[in-house]
Image (tube, rainbow, N blue to C red; front, side, top):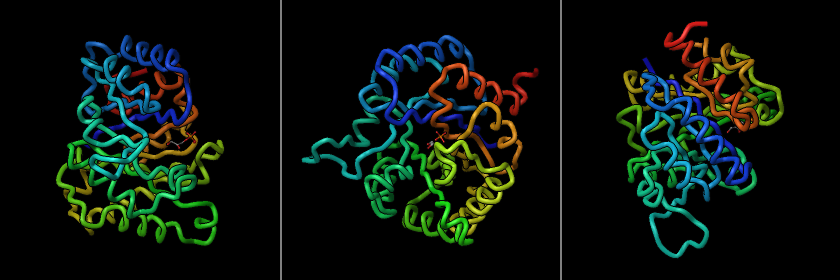
Length: 261
Ligand code: 13P
């Protein structure tokens, strides 16, 4: 059974007080609880990482960075290294989000270097891939996903599930309220898993969590999780509201059979 990941990507939202309160509420509802098979993650803005990592101590909640430097250390003003994240007990970081590809012109090559830096320090990269609406309409979805996977993972060793999480985020579904249907997302996830089987091994491909992002809400998460290759969500807008986040954790727990209605 693969791990289900419910990851909140808060992007550039929330004051420090709001972020703190939210994390305390999650801590309050999760403390002393083990939820085998489920990892709830929050990716806040950089300045809040330390505070939230402290709240998440002794709790199933994990904290992720939204990005990382490709460089290991040195004169790189404004950058934060994987080593710094590791020293704060941060275990996850998002790389290759489409907003970074679009607004910061990040290439697959740069994303690969970031991914390698994370792995070097033992963090789990959450690698985002996904096609634009044009690319989908032109029938190039798999070609785009294949190019992104090849470009971001060339030469990268993956031995175990904690070495990589992949987030399939079709760009046309991000922040648009237009989520991919379970079937559309499933097709893409199955392609990604087959790519991993071909380029690594079947055994590894079966063990890697592939999560979906793009207008996920408590209303559509259940249908997405019902798909055989969808192992969770990377959630933007809806994850900013604690009640939504709580409900999405609950839906994942239902899927795991840990709770019943
Ligand atoms: P939305 O859930 O707001 O569409 O954002 C998805 C996303 O980009 C998560 O990384």
